[in-house]
Image (cartoon, rainbow over all chains, first blue to last red; front, side, top):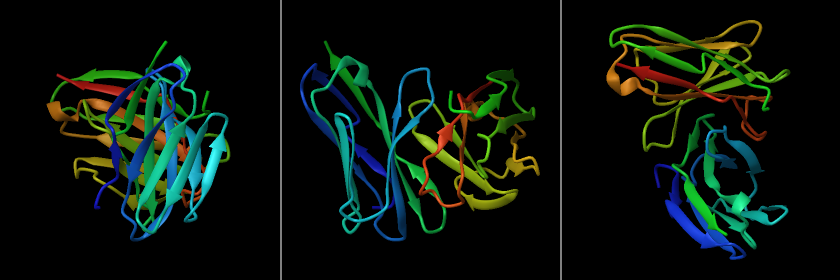
Length: 111
Length: 114
C-alpha cells in the first residue's frame, strides 16, 4: 500500500447499531497512526494517536486498534448515536516525518 | 476552539494572482502543518515546519511556498494562482516535531480562484 486508504467511503447506520471502518496505511517506515473526527463546518479533532503494534485505545463508545505489521487500523463505534455523524479521518506518520491523511469515512447515523 | 487561528477565513481572487494565508499555532506548539482540501479530495499534506525550520514536504507545488517565523506563526504563499488551486487550506499545529502528539486544526482558509 502506497497511500492511506479508508473504507468504506460512506456509511449509513441506524441509531443503536454498532459499526466499524478500516484504515490501511504503508507499514514500512511507520511511526504513528492518528484518528480524527471531522464534523461538517468544523475542523478535524483528534480521537486517538497510536504507535505500537497491537495498541488498543478507547474513548467512551469509540475504540480503535492498530496492526503495524500488516498496516491497518480499525475504528469501532458501539451503539451509534446521531451525534456520531461525522467524517472519520485516519492519518499515518512515517519516519520521514510526512503525515498523510486518508479521504475519510463519512458516517451518517439515522435516528 | 482548537487554539489555532487562520486568516483570512475566505478569500476570492483571480487567476495569476498571489495570496498569503496565515496561521497562528496553539500556544506552546512548535510544529505547523499545512494541508489542502480540494473538492471531493481528502486532506493533502503540503508542508511541515518545526520551530522555524522546514521539517517535511508533501505534495506542495513549486508555485507555493511557506515559512515559519520566530514567533512560530506560519504563512503559506500561493502564487500564479490557477482555477485548480481553489480549495480549503488547513493549518494544524502540534507540540513535538514527531506526530506522536495529536494535531490541532484551525478552521481553514477557503480560497476561491475565479
